[in-house]
Image (cartoon, rainbow, N blue to C red; front, side, top):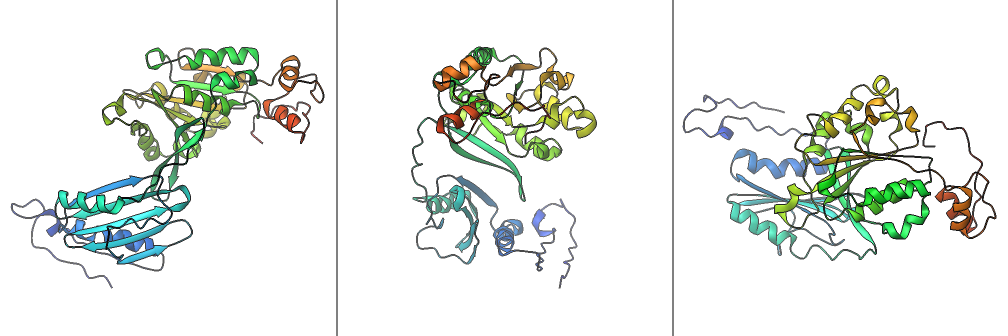
Length: 379
């Protein structure tokens, strides 16, 4: 049962705190989960004004057995599921809420307190010793992964393997390799154009080249992969969150705003093909606005798109001169280069082979296929 509270005061009246005239009502029904209850209870003292100071800490490489509670503190509420563990704890003048996602070894700890100093003390005690050194990954680079979750846009950083360009250059046909040579040498001072297009059949190594690019550019550019690009350009709130966020992998806070960011959108054929404006509405316009429109002004954001479409079928607004930092066709290796890569001509068709087909031939579990008519689709 919900009972409204009546207040004889006006909001903003002298001597009247805002929380004293705003009703605080918590309703729970069968659509709410235990985690929802923990989230609501954690904010009660903050909303009521008893604990006006709040601080939040995001953690990575969290230990599987992490309690995320200060020493000697017992959880008042606890919710455990297959994907997350949430806890609520209270003490003298403070409230703590923690959520641990064991699968990706990340967590978030939030504390409200009567003073900022107390809140910082409690949160330091909660996170102390709760993380571990990340597993060494040879030839790795840090990359963020964005998706629109149930609680809004979320970014999860993780290391990914990335070979050096020198090591993988032989995987690409001559013209494509030369284009990548020039791209690898770009630095913060030589960025001209905000859009990068990599097009070619599946299996030619477009994503592999971008991982190498992330390694080459690591000193000045953070790479973020958007897992749901169709949602990014149809949801303005999601787009603004991604566009306006700052670099997170820079160790020095003073340099975060100086670092560029590259958003990687894989297999976005429907977004940039010739009929995109008709089929996707404002999505194409928002993409272009992010690269060189008002939304992109003052933001050091690059957008890289991989597609299976031929350039001739792409929307003219996408490929117009001056918009692209790079437009690189990544074709299969011609017969001669494929033969040299494999060390034999056995199984290599006369038209050549993709990188994926060559690896299959080398490992002995596949054969290169005859080319099929292009459909513009990934599968």
